[in-house]
Image (cartoon, rainbow, N blue to C red; front, top):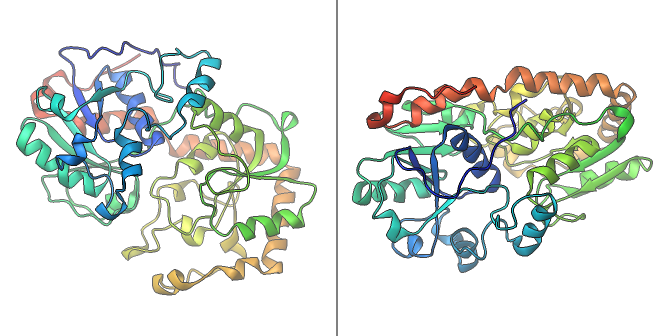
Length: 402
């Protein structure tokens, strides 16, 4: 288990490594924060619409960058998941400093575009291909000594030149590139994400979804109708139950309160925080490996990062009862997955859930053991450090910590 992190000062530390990271989503940003805080680095994120107006911020394709999206990521009063005062109140109730208005992460330093032109950055990290393109220009015009990194947690079909730098938690993007690269698992706080309760302290006959805009909710609802003595909850945007505050404490606690986690998605995860969080908490996952075990919509059918966690003991797999692996990507793209609604398939999923619930502690332990055997945040640190650290800082060597 990781040591509890000590919240440092908000003031940049002179003489240490300074990193600019775009803000893509909270879980990814927190993964950087946990690492850089441990190393004592300064971490900046862009603040202010000037980044966009001057052409140095383009998180998504231009067609997706409406005024609301730009505000969400660059305006101080709108970003951090649009949770505002309710987020701050929730955190203050949990004992966090009332001045911490940034969700999970105090000590992330705002950087305006004008300030960026005046300071010296050591590392610039883009987490989408669009931002990588404009951050290249940022480096060339304003930060010529900075090392530029593309981080990918999605299955981006981007190909870098041999002298470019890739930090990837997407196995697909990692495998298709021949460059300076490091494969890793996006870090999260295992002080919170770990098995908290035995089978006697939770309702193991329960299923929760934490994915926004649930794919095929009728599948979830059909299974729920067949299992009236079980509890089914679907959290997240556009789902039946309320959204969950994007707080590590909230999400980890709710994950631990359920017996099984639903994760049926057609758009394949690159990394998959929901799946990895579930495994860290010892929760068997209901999925469809037709999609979740491989980057099916790109060439090569390269396995996903999460597929290393999957076996007979750790998942309940729709594809086990309705195998369609023979379909090519064009056929799958037009397939509506209605065959998974077949009563025979649903009955088999129901039966497997009931059987695993009868011996729940055994399967929960197997899930957690699998997580521990696959994911080792500490072991991966040195590879990440060696990729990120720029040449002019390399004399310090890898930072060892107790």
